[in-house]
Image (cartoon, rainbow, N blue to C red; front, side):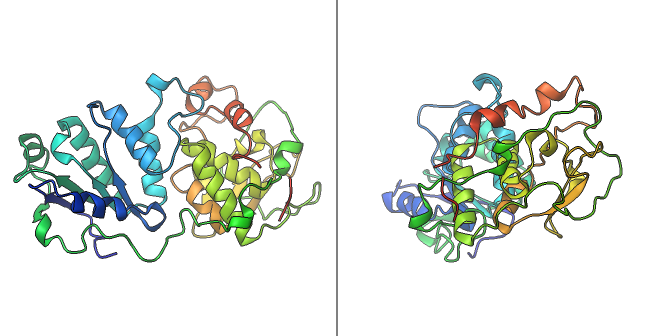
Length: 328
């Protein structure tokens, strides 16, 4: 890909050339870091636009655990764009975007450092676009001289590896669904750095082939737009931990450089506090998507819990990502 700079490009297409739209859509490749969004005609709210972004990423429309009108769709879209990560975000029909939508896009660009390409099917930027870009470094490019600006990347990225045909449609057993543990009291150890898991009291989860890992990732990507639910499902597969123990993970417990995730069991009822290795296919789900609720409380009875983290009820309702029983 030749457009990984973190700037803004306004692509002017005054003739509304179908070839430009085809090129933008052909360059859509989320697994390679290129996303093209075609906003739904007739909509103006930023909420609808967030759903357009999630749809472009292959996510379902609903976020489990939230009413549709209050679902944090922009937070979900931002988390996924940063986690994949997306290096180029192309938006068609940019001349129809409201100031609010344009500001949302600029905020996304600032957070994800993605190259934002706004395709304006006019001879010059609209007033809303000019106002939004005031003080923002950007460049104007004519469609006739765009070159490979809209081309997709040739090498797929690690975000959503394609699974082989033989893996699709087969059941994938999740050990966490076969066992539950319940306790009251502290759900997290302050300052705890656990040792590697020793598997003294339960069976080690069966190793997954690369094909199975790719299929698990594909199913989780397609079954939920909720970043934390996706992270919980992925962690349940590679740790075999029950939902209550998964809920003890905090941001400091996920170490991407070491590819490890620490889970806590302060009462020693299951594994004790232990660190689990994270397989490559699961990294994208843990990145930017911590399993814990976004507040500093440590007690499971915290008044914020039902609002901040709709687990494990949502996870139990959704279950494994579209499980379809043979292990391979």
